[in-house]
Structures are given as C-alpha cells and as structure tokens.
Length: 152
Image (cartoon, rainbow, N blue to C red; front, side, top):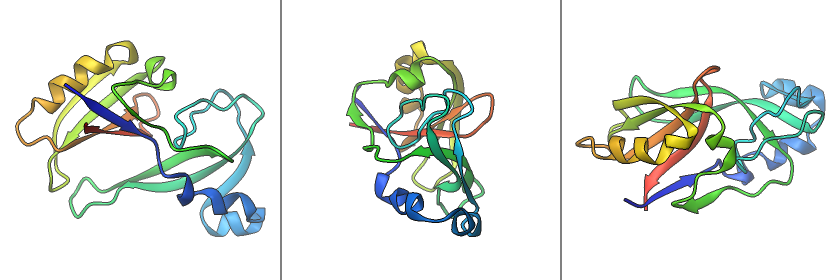
C-alpha cells in the first residue's frame, strides 16, 4: 500500500522568525536554542543541539470533534516541508511513535504504539481499519504531533 508522509507547511511558521521575543510571547511562542536533537515538524529532521528554533503551540488537528488537538512543537528557520511517498524520514525511524487513525469526521478509530523501524507495517494495519481516512503520528513519550500520513 502506498502512503504519503508530510511535515507542516513552512509558510505557516516563516513569519515567526522575523518577530521579536516580545512579539513571539504574544503568539504563545519562544525563540530558543535546541536543548537536544529536537524534531523540526516542517522538515522532519532533527535540529542540532544549540540551533535556533521556535517553540510554539500549534493546532495540528483542526476538526469539529472531541479529537481537536494542539500542542507544543519545534520549528527551524529556512526548512522545506517534508513531502514524500513511501519514504519514512530518519527522524521518525529512530523514535517510538503513537500512530492514530481518524475517519472523515475527525474521530479516532484506531491507534497503535510502534517503533519507528516498523512504521510501514503499522500504517498498513491502520489504513486497513474500516473508515480510516488519514493518520497522525505523535512522539510517544512527550505525546506531541510529529507528522501526517495519507494514502498516496
């Protein structure tokens, strides 16, 4: 089965890097140095410790259902949105993930905890769930959003 993994649209975040720290705080965001190899949700690559990143709150599941979600995410300046078919970025490969299947109404209809190297098999199983329209991947330990998976 073919699948497509995408990061968040870069254009949603580019403007943040031009804001002052005071302006960022007004948006519920902070400019900081990456404390570790934190994941950029745009490029689906890891920032190197010490890289400048923006930590912001983002509504990644803007649906009219109880599963509407937002959480803190890191983004890095100048990144291109990850968008590949049948490829899993290394950032997802090396982490434990919570994969969640949603129907067209934004209701969660399946979920699975999976190690990154086994992600393709989890994607196939979750898309086999009747009514599964798309998947969201989350980093299991912190619970924050990682990427979207659609059928290709």
